[in-house]
Length: 283
Image 1: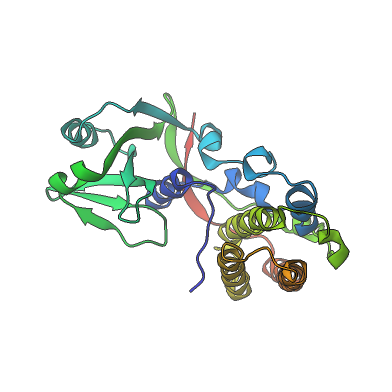
Image 2: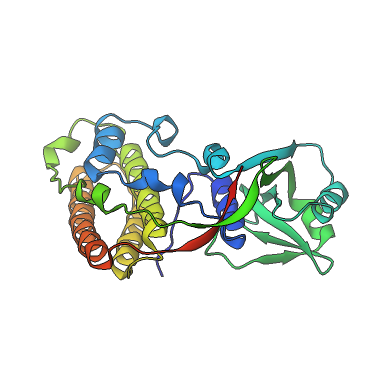
């Protein structure tokens, strides 16, 4: 099964859980995903940029005001009992999030609800919800909490969210790599990991952007490949064959991306204009 990754952080992943559960139209804040693979290659492999320095694919957290939402009640001091009271007294469409120390030993953000005397945690849209008692959560709570709610004066309205992105797809032209592009980088693994991760995120957002309009089986294949290559890149070592391995990965990713964009262009032309009603917050 392919795993989408629309956020650069666990906080973004948790926020997407809230947006999807409340059927909020967040397509406007992910339309920056239509980025040519050659641009990602230039910035992350050639220039050595980190994801945090790349402005063309932003964190979703920063873009929430564009869809009528705001972050509130930020705190690193709330106790579990205070969190419970805050969640239970929250107004409709208010989402709660906390920092959670996972069994793997790393801190992650979770979308949290209170149901039937238990907390329900969700870390990413594809994950199954995790039910946990207050006493157990207290041991893993990392003292970080915030909420998302509609901005003051915003109403929740049903809107036609269809936007024709096919014109921007057409501009994503094929690109070809050369193995010599990868010479002389001592930190090639770091550069490749950033490139693959950002590509994975951009194409995951692209899948969400078109998910209600066309059959995306080829997109699932592309995401499986990106997920696989990202996992491989985290286990590669600096060897005499590293450039050749990375070049092979780049060639395969590029071939899949060319096929993906060709298919999406064809299918969006066949589909034409459509309608997809969702909820949005508007002032």
